[in-house]
Structure formats: C-alpha cells, structure tokens
Image (cartoon, rainbow, N blue to C red):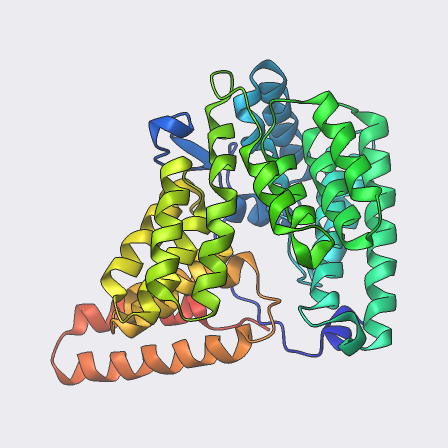
Length: 383
C-alpha cells in the first residue's frame, strides 16, 4: 500500500522555484541573546536542488555546513536545519532520496536526509490520536518506516560519527519507540556535543507527562545550568517550561494566562514555538494584529517554520490580506504538502485568489489582478 493510501488524504504538489546555483540561504535576524545570526539554510532551495537531481551539490553544501559546525558549535543549527529540509511525508520525495543515496553513497549526507524523511513519514502515519484509536495497519507502517530510518542513521554515523543531524534524528525516533532508548540516545549525543541545543529541544519532550515524564521533570530539565557564554542559543532552553504552560493555557482558552507564560518564556530565550503559542492566544482573543507581529518575529528566527507559516496564513486570512496569506501558504505547501487538510485549505486559497482577481478586474486594477494571477498560477497544483 502506498504512503498516500496509508495516510488517507490527497497530497497536492505545487511548483518549486528553480534550483540554486550555490549553497542556498535565506536572511534571518536573530536577537543578540541567541547569537545574532543573519543567514539560515533555505529549505525550499535544498528541496528544489533535490528535485533537479543536484545530488553532488547537495552533498557538498551540507558537508560544508557540518565542517562549519565542527569548527564552531554555534553553527549546529545550520546543518540540522539543512537536513530538516527533508522532513516531509511527501511520497514523491522517496525516489529522489534513493537516487541521491545511489549517486553519493560514500557520504553520510544522503543517508541522514533519507532518515529525516522516513521519520517524518512515520510520524505522519502515527498521527496525533491515542495508539488505541490508531489503525493497526498505520502503526505497522509507522514501525516499518522507523526501522528503515534507524538503518539510515546507523549508516550515516558509521561514515561520519561527528555528524550532528542524524544524532538528533535518532533521538526523535527513540522518543516514539518508548522505553529507555530515548534517554540513551540523548546521553550519547550530549557526551559528544555538550554545547549543542537541538538534541535538548527534541529530548525535552521525553520529560513531558504524555511521554512518560512529569511536569516537575520537564521544569527541572529546563532549569539545568548551561554554558550560555560558549553557545548563546542554549539560553533558549530556559524558557521551555513556561512555553509548555503557555500552550496548555491556550488549549484551555485561558488566553491571558497563555500570553503571560509565553512572555516569560520569550524573556528567557526566544524560540519560534513560544511566539507561535502566544500568537494563538492573541488570535483567540481577537487580537490578530498582535498575533501577526509575533508570527513575523518567529519567522525572523526561522523563515520556514511550518507551524508558524500555517498559523500566519490563517491570521492573514482573518485580516483579509489574501495576497499576503496566499504567499505564506505557498511557502508552506512547498515545504510540506502532506498534511491532512493541506489540499482542502489549498483549494480555499485558490478560490479566494480567483475572487480577488475578479474584483480587481472589475475595479480596473489590471496590474494588481495580473500579480494575483501569477500567484494563482504558482499555487495551482501540478499533479
């Protein structure tokens, strides 16, 4: 059974931009307390290179980011974000990744990328419901995808034991497997890189009650002393407990409490998730302008954070800024088309843009109508 059939929903495909000719980055504006970074890997550019069969370039670019990390731990996020470009359940990526592995089998990079993809597929198959409410065939397919992800992780680390990205993926896989495996995976990675941040961000979920931990264990993990002088990004971990409290409060409609908790979390260390949770509380309080401000702040840290893009497109729709919202949604669907409701939301945006084109034509605004038509063409599925 295909991944599409297993998922049970349509996966829309839109055109990617032309592949980059050099290592692709996008501008960011990290605050000084996070290290002041000004560029970030362009996930869409990397995916466009994959679709175009630029396997040698992809390998060279990501190997270079790994070497940068080995010289300066603060560049950890560059290599983990580059590999995260392939965290999609889009089944069309399968053959592309297999071809990449075949083209450069001596490098750890394509194995790490395929492991990230297989992990994303497994997580999509698992879904967000309780295990007892999840179909058995989906659980079996999830385990199969995790099995092959582990094989790719093992292969990647046998080639380059210092590669940080597959170590982070290994922690995520272990988290879903349950038991003590996640603690062992995190301990190994922490020993190899005590100043790394991404392993802690993934592992922190294991401290939560729904993963077998407790609120106390999660808070204790967030409070641990860290060498922020050597890596300022470690500061962001101090806000994890308040960020989690913010999300719980927003879930329960306690928006003022959520806003206060996320504000404390952001003061400890900015993370895109804290901005997104506070934005959700603002939106639920009918404060869409403040929600947009927070989401734009999150995108200044990570321009391709898909949960942020998803909420921002909704907020811009609330504000009736349909062109802006559709552009954000285009970025989102290029990054991850394989979400459950992505196709139906895409069709809503297509209908909204067509209505805008008609309105602009009737108002005599031909240039604006043509710009909307170009966006409509970019957003129209190609298969």
